[in-house]
Amino acid sequence: MKDILRIAIQKSGRLSEQSIKLINECGIHFNNGKSRLKAVSYNFPAEFLFLRDDDIPGYVEDGIADLGIVGENEMVEKDKDILLVKRLGFSKCRLSLAIPRDKEYPGPHYFEGKNIATSYTRILNQFLEKQQLSAQIHEISGSVEIAPSIGLADAVCDIVSSGSTLLSNGLKEVETIFRSEAVLIGNKAASEQKKSLIDQLVFRINSVQAGQGNKYILLNAPEESIDAIVDLLPGMRSPTVVPLATKGWHSIHSVVQEDQFWEVIEKLREAGAEGILVVPIEKMIV
Ligand code: PRT
Ligand code: ZN
Image (tube, rainbow, N blue to C red):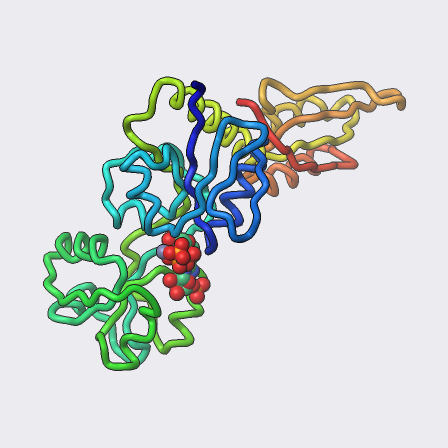
């Protein structure tokens, strides 16, 4: 019988939409009714399990799922015997310590002897140990940010993204103890056949990510500017240079990295480029 990959993704929450989007961008499609717990892809040997994110590391360790997508915070906190297959770059956030806004913060020793509310006891403990601090950890599973205002704790250790939840609860972020993004995790004992399917999936994810990190650029340039422009645009191998119908002019095509984009554009204009077009790349095979 042919193996099929079982991939666990969050049923509903902050990771769900982007996890499904990434799978779809990899050309893997399935029909997902809102209330379903399982879906089978019709164009890739994979089945999807929709679960709470807290349960995903355990299911992957047990081999109920071969792969799973979770926040790195959840992966580290659950501390299961699994593989980190690939960082996925979305759902970036941080785990931070926060204290009431009106308190002075002199440094980590502030937390000595304090009572800290969190859902991330393991990661917090690691931080406290490293800082050689002893504090009481009060484990709560939700609405951590209200703990100080109801007298349950002196401080909180919680996930922060924009910071507005802390702000609206009269708290200020004073230490970032962990940075997180979505990760693809895997079972350690996958069969050879499943490993080969995982490789195929990772290859597709790499292509999607490379495409998203780059732009395709087209521009026109006079003959005398070509060398300077080619130097600015390394491309995948080297830029394409094709003559335009107007004599002495060429069109140059290349790929630029998203994070170098504005800097390169400025230099291209200075070097004589005109009519610059920038288009997204759907996939890039590197
Ligand atoms: O129901 P289930 O158990 O599956 O979901 P959940 O409620 O446990 O998790 P969910 O959907 O809230 O988050 C899933 C993952 O998204 C987390 O494990 C993180 O890796 C990641 N993530 C990214 C976040 C946030 N951003 C985030 N902002 N997880 C939680 N938050 C919460 C945070 O707890 C706090 O209450 O949002 C609030 C802070 O947000 P800001 O923008 O106000 O700072
Ligand atoms: Zn959860």
